Structure formats: structure tokens, C-alpha cells
Image: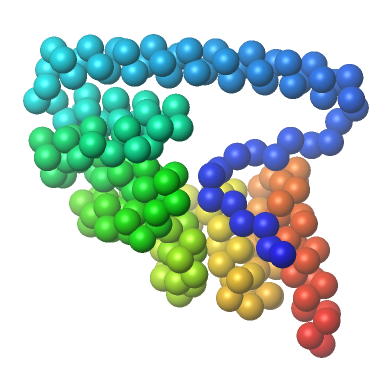
Length: 209
């Protein structure tokens, strides 16, 4: 089974248990600190919204804060308000797509992500997220087009290469998938998802020969 990945993260290398324990404690502290920071950010932007309710950016950032806190359902009405105030707010359109992706509603993410790249054609996050949405819907040709456009703008993105590899893999284009998994591992040799999928693609290829 191909390992798919839409929420972007970095895979850590295997290390000794004691170091891993120490690192786990550090990561827990950092995560806790990050959550405090984002909660403070939410309070900050809530205050800005109260004082300046006509500022699209304030509504956008408040919505993004809720997405970061894993409450995309709360973010959507805030982001829609931002778009109402400024229909050309590309960050808000992309954030709306992010929220729908987090809610496992890729079909709803496509329209706002298309709008984001319509406003700003070289917006790499819009293309990348659009590709992820199409991939989630098994619309492989559309996903490839979007992800290749994203790579033209950011050729060193591990996550874009990875999602393109998965798209080729699910489509049955094993040689292209293998090449993209290799690209991922050139950029991040510790990406275990890519390494697993690469080995799987090789096994599938040789089985077909």
C-alpha cells in the first residue's frame, strides 16, 4: 500500500533510545510552547478584529490561527468574512482551501484554491494545495499539472516532490514515481515514507517484468 501524505511534516532519523527520549521531551516542550504562542496569536487577532472589523487581514490571520490549532471548522466563517471584505485576498482563499483539506473535504477545497492562483498565478502554496486536493480525489492528471506548476515555482520542495511521486505511483507510472521518490530522498535522505514507497515501487516494477 502506497503511503500517502498531505499534511506536511519532516520524518526524523532513527536514533538511540536515550537520545530519542530526550528529543521527545524537547519536542513536547516545543509543541506546548507553540500552542501557547498560537493561542496568544488568536487572542491578539481577536482583539484586532474587535478594534478593526473592516480589516480583511485581521480576519484572515484569526482564521489561520484556528487552522493551526486544529479547528478548521471555526476558521471557515472567519476566512469567508475576510474574503467578503477583500475578494482579492489570496492568502484568505488559500487558507479556505487549507481548512477544507483539513476537514477531508477536497472537493470543496478546489474552488478557493483555483481562485487563489487566479489572483496570483505564481502562488506556490495554491498550486501545491490544489495538487493535493486533486490527488485526494484521484484526479491524477489534474494533480500532476498542479504539482508540476508548483515545482516550477519551488523546485526544492520535498512535499511537492513527494505528492507528485504518490500521484504517479497511484496512476501506475512507476518509473516516474521512482524518479520523484529519489528526488525526495536527495532533498531529505531521512524521509522514511519516501524510502518505503520507493522500495514498494521497485518491487511492483520488477513483478511486472
